[in-house]
Length: 127
Image (cartoon, rainbow, N blue to C red; front, side, top):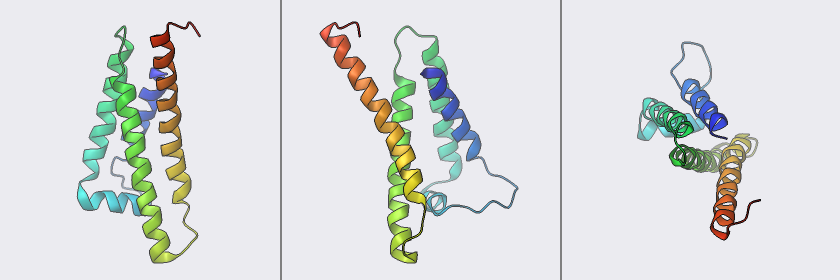
């Protein structure tokens, strides 16, 4: 799980690096860059990658996964706000709801798994 989390965080950090290609900037990225630079988010994803790698070599570590869940929920919320704003301004048709569901859904699944494992450990179950 940590390797997957690390690879996901690394892919996000690399994806948000500025590019010289003519890619269209999504409304969500425009929303984010109004408050802070994109480098801030690249750094947060890179730190999350580092925490996940660090946790690989520790007997019990959850900082990387916790940071990943936090970033997934933050990006999910950002895409939700951007989607609502896009619908208000441009009407229906935006596909940002799908990205919101992807980030928030993945964050929710990981969070739920962590809660379930924690509950099983506290009860002493071996399942």
